[in-house]
Amino acid sequence: MACHVSFTNQQRKERTPKALKDLIRSTVSAVLDYEGISAPGELSVLFVDNRSIRELNRDFRNIDRATDVLSFPSGEDPEGEFFYIGDMALSLERAREQSEEYGHSFEREVAFLTAHSVLHCLGYDHETGVEDEQEMFARQEAVLQRMGLTR
Image (cartoon, rainbow, N blue to C red; front, side):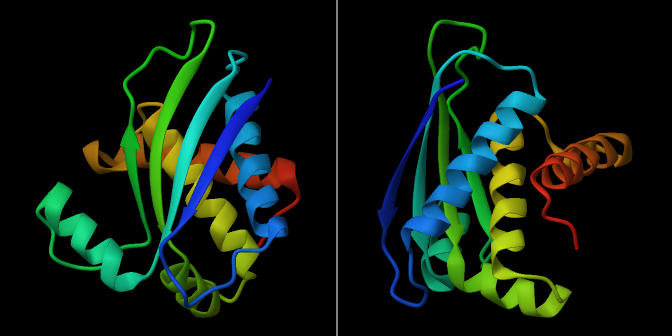
């Protein structure tokens, strides 16, 4: 399954080396594989800092605080010949803070947030109830386990 991931960097707090971008690409592919989606897709990733993601969160969700990742699903059907998955805004600054807070690698945190965002783009929502939250988080962990990114 082929998936194109494009990147735009609008922050200067964290480096965005090829290895980080490759990790994100691998995570997107792992989620799509786990979900049984074989159509080629595309995802746009925007790297931001805490200030910028706070502005996006305020503007798009009416929540005036920084967060770690925002997902903007395209709403396209993943069963077609090609589908645009959506857009992801990722605060690398917050990812670094959370990796230190949770005691795991920055790479694991970025992969976790990427899997989280892609699942949102595919229609999963942990904010709609306990069962939905458990299902989404179990899928995220299963993908990370398959990738060898355990805690």
